[in-house]
Amino acid sequence: MRIENSDRRDGPTWHVDEDDLRAYARGELAAPALWSADAHLTACAACRGTLAGVSDTAALDAGWERLDAELDAPRPGRFERLLTWCGAGDGTARLLAATPVLRRSWFGALTAVLLVTFLVAVAAGAADRPTLFLACAPLLPLVSVALAYGPVLDPTHEMAVVSPMHGFRLLMIRTVAVLVVALGVGGLASLALPGFGPAALAWLLPGLALTTTGLALTPRLGPVAAPSVLVGAWAAVLLAADAARASTDGPLAPFTAAGQGVSGLVAVLGAGLLFLLRDRFDVSGRGVV
Amino acid sequence: MTPTVSASGLGLSYGRTRALDDVSLRLTPGVTGLLGPNGAGKTTLLRVLATAVPADRGAFTVLGHDPGTSRGRQEVRRRLGYLPQTPGFHPDFTAFEFVDYVAILKELADRRERHREVRRVLAEVDLGDVRGRRIKKLSGGMRQRVALAAALVGDPGFLVLDEPTVGLDPEQRMRFRELIAGAGEGRTVLLSTHQTEDVAMLCHRVIVMAAGTVCFDGTPAELTARAAGRVWSSTEKDPGAKAGWRTGTGSFRNVGDPPPGAEPAEPTLEDGYLLALDDAGTEVAA
Image (cartoon, rainbow over the protein chains, first blue to last red):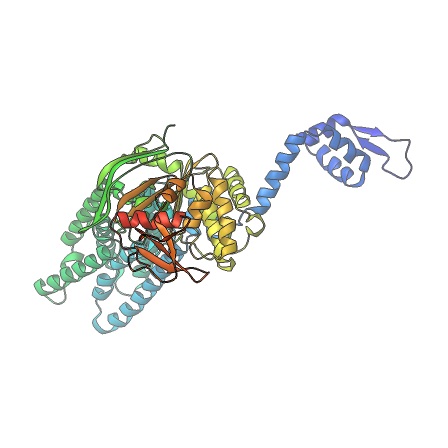
């Protein structure tokens, strides 16, 4: 509502109704009256004075505090905004995107995928078999996850351990994030390899089996020794499978249907063991985890 | 007064080394100093009380909760502030981002409330003006204050500080002492330190550890009184002294059992500390 002002020649010819100013102060004035009041208040000292008089001081202070806090808040990075857009809470997005150790893990995973793909392409030219790729690719998620948690690469590990957030939850948040990248990129790289077809995806289940088993062994062996032991064990399995192979043209045992079944079973057992040991990730374990 | 922390018979071994051996203590509101030489078990005790590592033996409660259970541990951690001996930072974080990150770990879910809390604790350690500066560009003293701010998130009832003044210059150390004194108002603070000055200036109580055990538990005045009549001055270092060192005046200050006719000197907290260690069988020769 407008009130005509006939007393002043140099100022606005009208003033905002006091009820509207009260609604404006409460943030309840709707457009288009809001737009009109906004424009008018910038030019009319009298209405600004009236507004100051009708405003709730506490609400105004709270508004300034909110504004100040928003201006002060760290601006989320692109990846953090993407995670939020994908549905992650802002806290989870920050834990993931603003943790340098994870950036390094992701970067490491991508680099490893590119390297392995390159080596496979070279090897494929000579032997026309995906063996080298299948042997190396399962280690990718194992190593990536190992890099994502623990005192070795996380400078804030000690603070994280004594925080109320359960260590297993933090581990799972980071593990899932790293696995999505490692398995996703690795999977795409596999499919892009010429001539291998879906057989190139035979590394996925062994990769999951190694990852879950590696995590389950971490409370006992530590974040460095556990994946190292599994790398050795995987190499031993491959060598044994190569020695036992009847024909040089056939796939190694871990990449046959039976081998895939065993990998799947190990992955499930590893996940179960990991769940049973989840409380062991909630303390430092004498510097082991 | 109900103790904030009550521990009984705590023990922890690394292989054959007993890092903690039958440690019992009760902590009440105010600043308690924890003194001891390297390897005495101070950091191990702090890590156990901060729930970072479980003890092999014994039991303790913090604010009435038993950290031996998963639920109790969570409750303790909600009321705990911990500044580790070498606090790690993500150097590319700003001070605000780092404390915000710790606040997320402390389960402050609401973004607006969390940011308000981050601003509060940064203001409490006088870093409000540099909250947007990257940690790698802050001085050592400022970084320690960022770590203290992170420990203060959530207004903890029990604050564990592991040698927070190490590596700080005298002015920064003074500033940090003021902050610790402020933090000790209304809450229980356990302060591990090598500096007897820290204890003399801040603490209402002092615990001395040696070889994983508590060898003194009392007030700073009681620790000082332990050296009464056992400190003397001489022109040369007394070979019979437990420890002796040249002072700024050129004379020697000796602690131990004084020879007949020795010139007595006023005991200090440091003298009492050295004698407490000596009585516990720890080498203190200076």
